[in-house]
Length: 303
Image 1 (tube, rainbow, N blue to C red):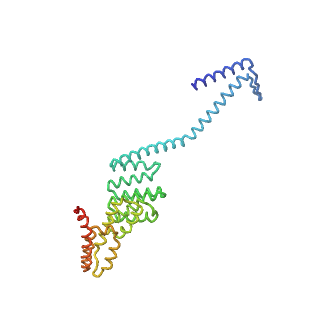
Image 2 (image 1 turned 120 degrees about the vertical axis):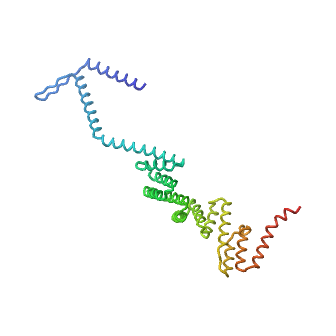
């Protein structure tokens, strides 16, 4: 509809201009020795319009020719960026499907013109981890850090999780310790630190982490209870030299009241008392424990 309206308007203007030119053609005389240009006003205006159009489109064509190299470069860059995006998305698809080799190939192909080489390198690190290539994984992580040092936290957290998956518990602990020093409120870092301490059987440091985890509710209470009992059992089981009864008492006083009622921990503490030749204390402990454990049974039997 707009095209039709525009065409009709143009025809109307042309017809009006023709009628005006026929009724009053005008007269134009241009002299410059030894040349003389004599014509009607309508023809002169028509020539002026034609010359202006030729100059205008000629200049535009010249500008386009001059800018051809730049336009071609921009077209190539746009094409490379589009292909890089497609490769990145294909790489993520293969990564989620567990096709590590295909994922790495696509992700590496996307890096040269990717919008975010940082994310591409992180994803490639995951693909390398899936193939068990630790050196290549660390290289991708280093590249990610170089591309975006502002996202160092993301890189180090990814590195720590991959190190734990690969069983590199000491390296993961070192990475997480750096993260926690710079970001003490980072929740996931504390969770991973607890896992690293547990794997390394670093019970003393794990015991220091658990109260914070309970206070901040970083893990379910049931899981924290199991971790706490395991930690306290291992700490109580540490070998003690003769005459270290005070140290044993101090360790037992550090056990939570709930955990002291657990038969497993009572048994560990009793064996340590026997090792320290504290037989009377051991007998009293076991008698009290049997009384506490037996009371619910008696209550159930009573009508």
